[in-house]
Amino acid sequence: MKATAVAPSNIAFIKYWGKKVEKLRIPSNGSVSVNLSNLLTTTTVEFSPKLKKDIIFYNKKIVGEGRTHKRVIAHLNRIRNLAKINYKAKTITQTNFPDSVGLASSASGYAALTVAASNAAGLKLSEKDLTILARVASGSACRSIPDGFVEWLEGNSHESSYALSIFPPDYWKLTIVVVVVGREKKQVSSTQGHRVVKESPFFKSRLKNIKKKITDVKKFIKEKNFAKFGHLVEREALELHALTLTSNPPIIYWQPETVRLMNLIQIWKQEGLEIYFSIDAGPNLFLFSKENDTNDLLKKLRDNKFNDFILNKPASGARLIKNDLS
Ligand code: PMV
Image 1 (cartoon, rainbow, N blue to C red):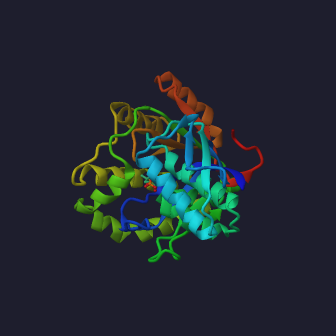
Image 2: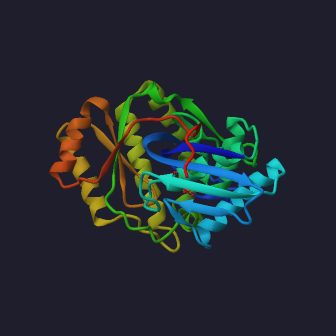
Image 3: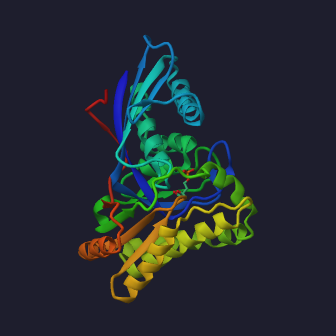
């Protein structure tokens, strides 16, 4: 009873921030994202009658008791309940990018865990059901399961809040450059951020406008209208941070280098380089450019001492692979 899955991280164009139902991770609003080809988590899960307790390895280290341990075991328990098994599991996880710095490591991690563990347990779930299961472990993980450009429908119940592919990965040849400006672990988790946002005075007005934003972003992707798409995505990222800054208590995810790069991007735009940014709950930036402009963008980054970056294109979602980790 063993299976291995690989899953990408994803960056949201329209963000998930705030929950309607805390425990089930039903979001306050829908969201739209794209999977990233080079931020990947691979997970092998084996259920075995020989194991006396669950063992979790993360990047070659055993995960001791604590928040992550509890969260992974809770997810294994959901899957054991569905499959009606009670074997303990060994999970081995390997990522190719830093975790807890706003690069959606939990999205790719829990998507990989969901696909690997449910297959190892013998469940045959549809893609939709996999997204529902992953969502309960980590909201944005549901968007790392379908391919390419993905929408997470807000829904109003466990069954109606799920993710689906809206365009395949090769629909639009964008480059997404993840610029890592800080590798320190963030102080405030997104779980906490979702809780405290309700006290931001801007939260209600955000929710009033969000449906139109979702319709617009899908239209701009469909039309491949890069200028309108980029402008909307950038404003949405800034709105997320307007919310975190005005939450109670406030959360400041940016570092000085975050702001330096945001300002440079405005200058580069005026110089004729068409790029836009997004930022998640962390200091790092996700830059969108057309394929033809990628080299110019990378040169500008290097010239300004931003040397820690990861190049991505739109990617497939979570999938099973044959090579098990050991
Ligand atoms: O799934 P979580 O709880 O890690 O929340 C993700 C929140 C953001 O990354 C900031 C936005 C999003 O939609 O991915």
